[in-house]
Amino acid sequence: MLQEFADWATYAVLGLAEGSQLGAAVNFFVYDSIKVALLLAAIVFLVGVVRTFVTPEKVKRWLGGKSGGAGNLLAALLGVPTPFCSCSACPLFIGFVEAGVPLGVTFSFLIASPLINEVAATMLFAMFGWQIAALYVGSGLVVAVIAGLAIGRMGLEGEVEDFVYKIKAKSVAEAEMTWKQRIGFGMSESREITWRVLPYLLAGIAVGGFIHGYAPTDFLASFAGKGNPFAVPVAVLLGIPLYSNAAGMVPIAGVLISKGMATGTALAFMMAVIGLSLPEMIILRKVLKPKLLAVFAAVLFFSFAATGYLFNAVLG
Amino acid sequence: MRIEVLGTGCPGCKKLEENVRAAARELGLDAEISKTTDLGRIAGYGVMGLPALVVDGNVILSGRIPPVSELKALLR
Image (cartoon, rainbow over the protein chains, first blue to last red):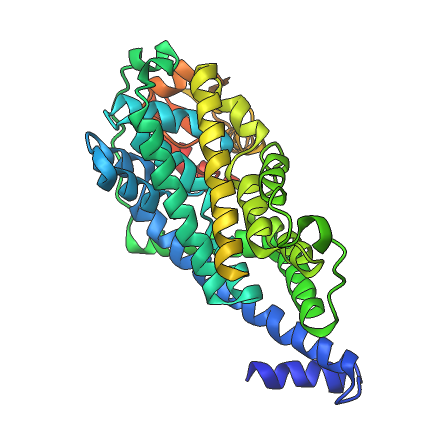
């Protein structure tokens, strides 16, 4: 049905010739744009509804006192549906620490939340297929768990700003939403986010079309392709201070790969951009002393670089 | 009525403040509206998502930015 609409739009409305390369490209673009937009709207809606169940307050209660790898894994999984507004990072951190969530577990959540984003996963799925999307989500979880475990083992609790431990928060009574409210929330999230992401989505599909239809120019291949082992850490270093939302990075990763960058390097770059940023570090400085902040950044650096090498090895 | 908008300065926090002021104005509420950016005070409310809204010492919403219409219903 969607295909028929795309055919009609391309050949009847725009009058392009059937069998022409431009006709095929536009046909693909129309078909895929609508398909992915619908997919995105559906997924954001579902995640939105899930979020009405997985509130930060509940996460805090579930994670309180849980240590060991299971706590880190749970924290990372709960970070997935939780979106990340940089300004929420601090109250979230304070809330978790104050509820007795171990430091390492808190970090697993703080890492997974911005890093693993359902919009990015959907777009990766649309542009590169389910394997890449699954690798992105899977490696994000692994990074969040391992980095959180590592930080937890370092005994850096003293490197949290002292005032954080002194806060006695009132517990907020949470009103449970009705199903009608949950669905309403899911739908408004779906509308807002799909609308906001639409330009990136269209850019991503256009880039995807280019990759399929035209020969890639290997302009990046010589210094960022599979032959250069330094490309990965450099890509991560460049990505850390940069910030873009997850949706914006997917088309960029696509362009980089089409120009010859190795897939692992591009994914490492994307994770470095969305997983950590200068604004986020500046904000976290309010609750973390410099040493812990530096350790946090360093652990992420190694994690993203390791992921990049791994993907290059596996996918190359 | 004392209304406090909790936020640390991101655009969403400013938007909530604007919406709250608009809602209060449209309802003709006699309310003292203030913005709190101090983390210690914000955390003291037990709030984990920003921006958040506190009315007469009670947290009535956190982590989202409702439109003016919904705020009017909440504040009434």
